[in-house]
Amino acid sequence: MEQNGHGSMGDQSQAIVSNLDRLRSRIARASIDSGRSGDSVRLVCVSKGQEVSALRAALVAGERIFGENRVQEAARKWPDLKTEFAPVELHLIGPLQTNKVREAVALFDVIETLDRPRLAEALAREFDAAGRRPKLYVEVNTGREPQKAGVLPEDADNFIKFCRQDCSLEIEGLMCIPPADQQASPHFALLAQIASRNGIDCLSMGMSADYELGIQLGATHVRVGSAIFGARLHA
Ligand SMILES: *Cc1c(COP(=O)(O)O)cnc(C)c1O
Image (cartoon, rainbow, N blue to C red; front, top):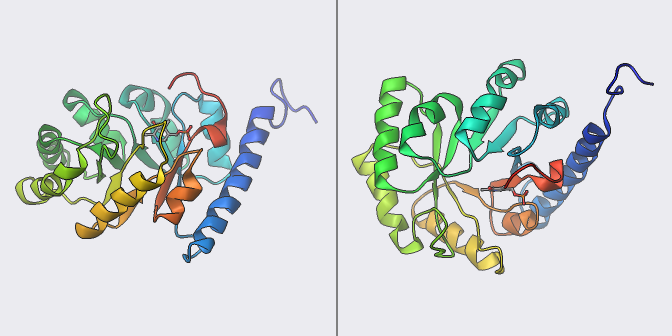
């Protein structure tokens, strides 16, 4: 029954709820099929380019882990929702410029895109100043794509060591975005190898098109946007 001008539950909200239902069971199935427990993988709902009404629908449906790729956009959409639906875990999944480090550290709970020494140094300084320490994942450019962020695979071990030893940062995870035009599996396997030899537990890999493959190859976090929310306003 119509309760207000938007209906009791909009079409978009209903679509989000049923997309989430389907996604959760496929994630659980993929986890079990690869010999892990059904709840071993965290779903990061990628809400970039989505309006607050869509975020709210996913929150009401019980989701608490979200990913945004722009600091400014997240700062506009999230502070009030974070309070209202606490605890929410907000992941930064887009490039971080050093001049936005203060704002990012204040807002995000996980920064998945640590990829250069200057940024590591800036984060370490800000962690001390702010007394807040978001978890850090190192982004690896597994496809060696010049336009893409991330450390090159052959530089990853040294960079992780630099973060740990020179900046006293804990590295909790690794993240990659495979080239759009290639099989993702070798990239996911490479990321898992780098994590394993560096004693890193979290692996953020797999998006709408390939999250099940990510889970097969050891993902602890999958970042899914369009399969939950549909089309978005920007990339
Ligand atoms: C947009 C984005 C996603 C989600 O992509 P979908 O294909 O919509 O699931 C995941 N990770 C990163 C880093 C992104 O920028």
